Structure formats: C-alpha cells, structure tokens
Length: 218
Image: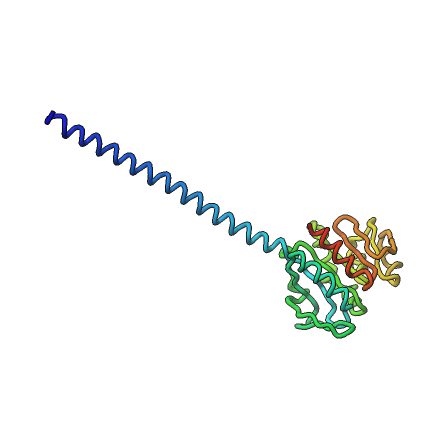
C-alpha cells in the first residue's frame, strides 16, 4: 500500500490542477462575454443617442414662433433631441419675440449627425430660398433617406433644392406657384406627407406637423 500512496497523491494532484484550469477557463469566458455585453451595450447607447437627434433650421430673424415651438415640444416629448441651426447668429428671434439658442451655423452642419431636418417658416425663412448651404442640406438629407420637413413658406426651400419633383406637398398659399413650377403636386392641405417628406401650410398646422414628423421619424 505504501508503494501506491505517492502515485495516488500525484493522481489526486493532477485532478485538482485540471479542475482549477477548467474553473479559470469558464470564468474567463463569462468575463469575456460580460465585457462584450458591456461594449455592445455602450455601442447601442451611443447609436441610440445619435438616432434620436433632429435638426431644426430657423431664420436668424422672423421665424414663426409656433412653427418652431410646437413641433419641437412634440418631438422632445417623444424622446428626440433637437438641435437648432441658423445663419450667422448665436440666437435667433421669432416674429413674435420667441428666442432660439443656435447650436450650429448652417454652414457647419453635418447631416450624418441627424435622422431628420426641419425647416421652420415665417417671413424670415425666405433668406434660405437661394442659400446654397440650406439647399444642399435639404438635398443631401433627402438623398440619404432622412426625414425632411418644412412648414409655411419653407417648403419652397425644398422645391428649390429639387426634391419635390413629382411629389405631393403643401405650403403657405404664396408658395403654390413656386412648388408647382418645380414639379410638385400642390395639395393645399394643412399637412401633407409623401414618403419621408413632411410639409405644412402654416402656424395653424404646427401641432399636426409636429405629430406627423414624429410618426415619420419612427
């Protein structure tokens, strides 16, 4: 028996080492999986944050207050993060005194940072009718499958960017001729949705416009 005792101890020792190695491997795999889950979760959170961003474009002066405020409130209530762009100002002023803090100059916007862009109306929006940054922003957003919205006279920005050709759209009545000339089917409705393009005819439609934007962004 004494001759076999060292062999038995060695055998038990080897079994113990094997068990320790297996335990370490299993825990290492679990930690690896957990680490992967953490990294994946962080990636999803970052993407989710990016996917919930919408850009509003307002005129530096005389944007229409309700057309900015109501859609923004609706989108933010739905969990969207709204950033605001304008032209060469840090703060834009509405027709009735509303103020909008400007996050970016329109010349510095990267549309890839947003899932949608909304052009707010008001008499001041005419400043963007021939503005190349605004027209390029609308066209690029459309080409990349983003939601593009415009209200009041701002649908003329979309028409001038060439993205309403063959599409249904509405706007303030003063813009009917321009939209038609640029190939749009003018509806005259309070709000018209054609694919990912959402247009509205004025401040009275601001609330419905916000709701349709929220639907389109889903």
